[in-house]
Length: 354
Image (tube, rainbow, N blue to C red; front, side):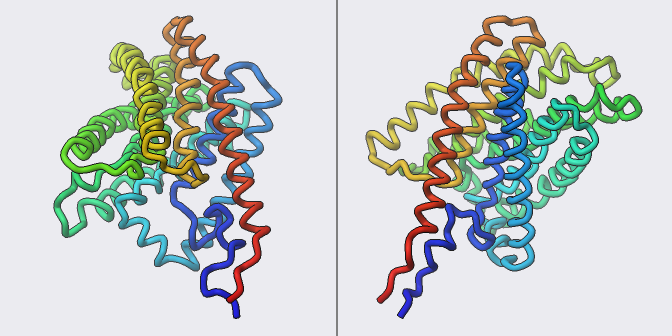
């Protein structure tokens, strides 16, 4: 008779409604930010191709998420109450905004505006419900013990709203003041959330034992969150005069340089952690959806350098961003091929018989 274990074809690298990771929208984030990076380099064909792929990925994941909400609500609720997964729901917000920025960069302003509204409203709802469900609503009060790298995704979501609002601001004259408020508001909230997340995660690392497997790919989001804060700041600095923007322009410009320097400092640290995890402690390098949490920060760091270099007239920073884009493209290609290989091998494998 057939084995009681689920057939391999149902696994599909986690791309099934019941098993769908809430962090799979990091795939959209990674592909979308590379499209934006190619736009900044003037690589029109790669930018358009990656944006089309971003749209296909986004549509697929939205359908699977809705399917999961309808047919597998218990599993979805369990993820929302799991401190290891709950903050990954914010990848939907960030993925939506990154897609919006890519569309706006290629002149599709109406769908980009719709995506921004969707992302901003979702960010507000999740910003109050997810922390309560996953952390504050728990009977155990050892909050620090539950902190992990996924908490920085909340920061990325906040800053993605700022980036999308600042990107669309020049194209909507009537909504310019409102978009300026949204951009500065979400940027400010994101900065405070980064400080809070960094404190909690740092205390977790110092006060509790940490197994090599626990230092998983989402810890790279600690750098990606800083990088997208730089992008949001650079876009705010470039915005037209508005009371909210004028009040913080100098502060945002200076802080963006500081954040870029910190993001640069984090890169060797995270590489060292990866060597310690996989080379020293032999944790296997096998594909999992969270690997996109490495690709996105790499792409965002490249885009951050290019945006900041142009906004603050820092040629060396822009050059580093342009060069780093090749690193991000290489990482994206590697992880994408690993994902396809996982899908193909699991589909082609027959269920075991007993």
